[in-house]
Length: 528
Length: 85
Picture (cartoon, rainbow over the protein chains, first blue to last red):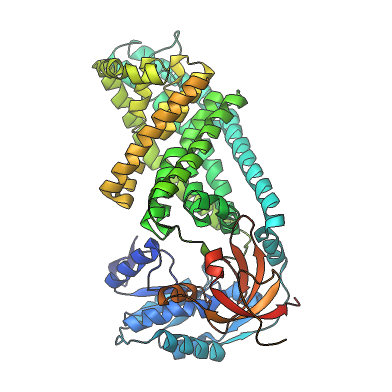
């Protein structure tokens, strides 16, 4: 992020959280590398846990870079009976120390002003023992604890990390999470977006259609084909009809509700607890509980899911997690479209997600057996529960939705345009003939279904939408949806995965995707 | 209580407290634990052990930490008995 600082342009970079400069995960590695290039470092320290955080602070001081310490969650620390003498701390550390409250912005101004006081110092080196004894001394001098009883949130917190109470609570949370997402998603579609498109946008488009003469290349690209004289927002396939309707009226409502619920769970601090509860399941696929975070983020969008695999310690784990996510975790956009198609047939809907889950487990167990190496264990701080701050929840939701709109809409439009051109040049037909043995022979789908697989490289949601005009049976829809989810990631995810796994890793991963998609599709075709 | 009751975090009873007397393992493992504040002399309370070889949950310095079983087996504690709070 670019900011102005004392009349000059400065680059402000938020590094991944780290406890030490001796990296234990890819995220800490990245943080350490980027630190070397920084001109000035702001060390945000959790005041509720000063002792542990000072380890990193001392590391940073040893490097000699200009440094400012933000003593964050200052209010929280006070509530917990932790008193820190920040003046004394500043004197002992020899760098500016500013108490801040990130949620309300308290102290941020002072923090910015203090940046001018940060100067470079001589680099020093200390052994681990020296560092810890110094930390002990600082804590003794600057921090005093008042005894207090566990807060209500802590008591509740302990219920959710104990297996006997934690598991039932998790089941209830997950159930209501999905209920809430679907309820909000369907509500937004049924009461807001659908009426908007049908009542206001459709008449406008009909006018445009007759203006353009109801047919011709330009008409078909912009408005699409009329279906029995009317615009069908899913099937017409014009830029201004399907190209807008799919991302805005079918997908956006689910993106909104998913990220709202996820944001609340994140800020509440529930996700690490879920990670602990699924730890033993994740060990079956060669991962540990923390790998559930990329999977959960992947449900929102596979791109942040792929990026989140960085929190895992080994290359092996990152490969397994990224491959499983790309194959068996469909993103919200895709899920929204699948629900749109099969929502009224719960049995078939369950078949789609059940197959994906089985694929996730089966492939994971297989990869865990085949790939050499051991999987490390979970080792994670379970941050205390916090009542979410609405301001931050809304801000984060807005950032994520904006990210979706700015990346999805151009991609969908591009996909629709691309498809129109391929159709009018007859290329789709040609590909359909060539791939017929696989599409029809193995998967039992009409050869035109290949068009969905082609567009699936760009956007999976549009691809699912393209199945509508094919009049597939419910069984065929299950096959098509599962194959579409598994065979290849969308281009945005693909690019990120190449960066995260390397060309060779991605090549292996891609082969696994193609074969498992074909395998699953063939088996499902035999069942249905 | 006698000083000789040394037990691994894995085998200590849930609800018990103990003081870390030894961490068996290389420098890498020790500094890994160090990063979340687990080192010799620290007092930890075991809150829960998850079934099916799931992780151990402990409280240390007012925060909760989840730790895998193999790792927990290498942390040796002098048992101090159950916490009152």
